[in-house]
Length: 206
Image 1 (cartoon, rainbow, N blue to C red):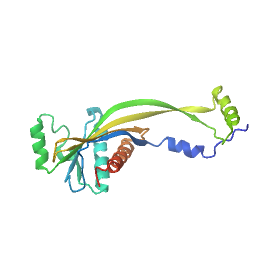
Image 2 (image 1 turned 60 degrees about the horizontal axis):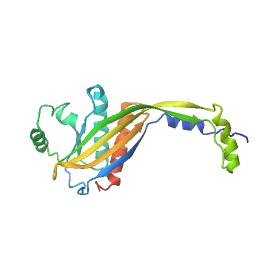
Image 3 (image 1 turned 135 degrees about the horizontal axis):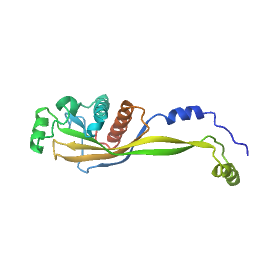
Image 4 (image 1 turned 135 degrees about the vertical axis):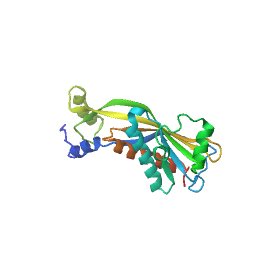
């Protein structure tokens, strides 16, 4: 059977170099019931390591911007308090500081995994086929190289939302994966959109 070279391969290769972000799992407290009016001010706090300070700032900035774009009042921890502002405080002191600034919601960002991954990219496409047509099309690929292996980085983040106005407890938690970001800005932007989309989808913000 004749192998048909997919004409859109160059476009697909360009897309393969772009970062993608998705929420893999998320949890919402049964007691959570938020709206734009229930949380007056949300503090976004990046908890990445000191080695990732620029990424930490970028993640905070992009999530705050995405929240503001949706109509929420949000600020970054870095801009409001500076880096490591709560290091020498206990919980009561930290809550007092946030209360003075009118903050009643906190979103934390933590990187929990970073991996190098590989993806096999096949250069050909065809079909649809009958069973034998499908078999005879793919059988040669099992015994000879026809594509290439693409190496890329994958980052897994945990994002938690705390309601300081009522229970002071976590009311939302999500794990998200961002693959192959071209820059810290790309990483932060794609991450932020996926998280806020999920918050809206889960009905925490209306």
